[in-house]
Picture 1 (cartoon, rainbow, N blue to C red):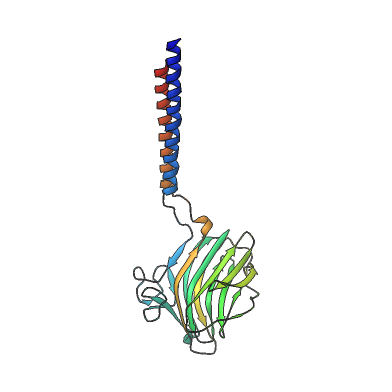
Picture 2: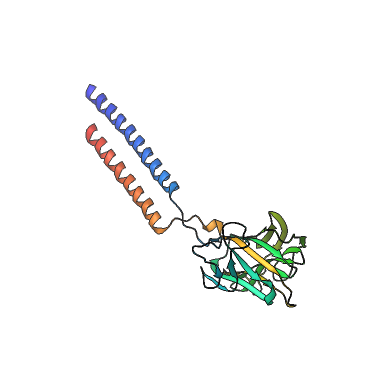
Amino acid sequence: MDDQRSRRANADEHEGMVGRRTRSLLALVFAFAASMPVAAVGTYETGFEDPPIVAGPLAGQDGWFFGGTVQTSVVESGDQAVYVDGSTGFDAAARALDTPVGPLISVEVSFQVTGTTQTGISLFVDTGFLAQIVSLNSLVFLGNSNSNTPPQPLSQGTWHRLRIEFDFDAQEMEGFVDGSSLGVLAMNPAGGPAAEITDLSLYTFDAGGATQDVYFDDLSFVAPTAAEIPTVSEWGLIVLALLLLTAGTIIVRREMTLRAA
């Protein structure tokens, strides 16, 4: 009887040990998984700084093409910003994004203008033009392929923060200037529903030859809901940790059985 009680006590003790060790191992596994860095998907951010971008023509650097000039005289932060020349009729700094749509995507950039001709940031999808925030005649508004929000005043010669948020589930987009909403518009890409955001453009345009100085700095393009996805190697580490947990539990249970026998 005493031997049976002793074995039962030992079994209970080892069962408790298994539970404690299992909980400890699980805690370590999930703490490890939570602490791992994550891979950003569909994200591009730049302050147009050196490195990787040097002063001079922006085209050909860090994925940018067409136009724009990196300069050091007028900046919002850091040492460099992009200048687009409004006296040339049309100038634009463009970059490929090649990011699948939705469900939530945002783009923002710092912007300064002196002049009254059209300028701003525009985005394109695989079916054509998607959206833009436009500055024109000291006013600013959000536009899609066939309509605009009511214009709001925009001061010249000072930095502003432009932002567009896209909700591809609701098929809506909202524009902001310095955190204040410009309004909400429906998404209606020129060529129909889109599968991919292809390009963005920081541009200025004037058909009449007016002079306009436009600067852009601190660009951010983010697909937030797609950003926190472990890489293949990180998933491998999680699986390895779970295998170690399983092996440790089997060993402890086997040890408990032998001692209780």
